[in-house]
Length: 358
Image (cartoon, rainbow, N blue to C red; front, side, top):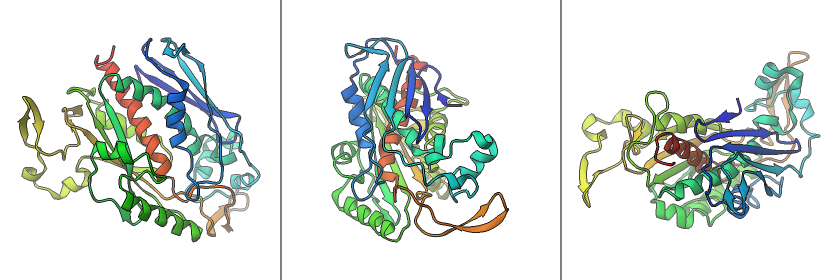
């Protein structure tokens, strides 16, 4: 299915080399101030950076086809569309018979047969994250109106890791000013070089995106199966190349004792807080008033310029494959905006469902 959410429902459509990509966002309260300029600003952050991104340069101009009038949401479904203009499908036809390692070519052809659109990865392409970012801009505006702030940044690229847990202020103030979306200048330069080194070798690198959300009230989340972690994880795994997610201490918690892992309750300015946040702001699948913190792991870009082994499906014989086309040596910097948007969509939906947003 191409739809996610219950009270705030997102449906995406389109493909990498089709006429365009877009989405329908249903459930946005009427009267929410929203402009195409605000949406465009977020979508522009997802575009590839010079030197470290794909040579494919789409304009990514957002069109608001419905759901907005005079700068306000009407209460009807908001339809957003982004045209595909820079398309070159000539390099992709052979992948139907010789699937690219790491891509969905083989599984998609087995599931959909000749109907699958192999061009640019079709519906499995990262191109489909553009409308997610566009819709996320609307959800972010809704959250901002209710005091919720979301910030994400590139925490690691390949072997370069920003080991300092960055504050939301650091993320918001610096994370949008550099092309790798790092939260500090020194790590930004190291990460950029790591990407360039991989690119020079015809290879690619992965990394992690860390996200922090502040301002959520206590009680957001719908246990048992619609918990904050569960809903966020489902949405994050819809982003191409995501291979893992952890909240708070995450997998580090397995090496802790309970006395180390538990976050002690304290009182700060008359409010209940915790002295640390290894729970990641969630207890029992419900927000506890602390910042929600999670990190998302992205595998290296599957398309590389090195020879790889594959199988010719017509002859069932092993072959060597060289991938041509235009690809990112690292998608992590562009994924930061996608993670922010995905988080905004999920949390806005949960807040509407929980009665925190009318």
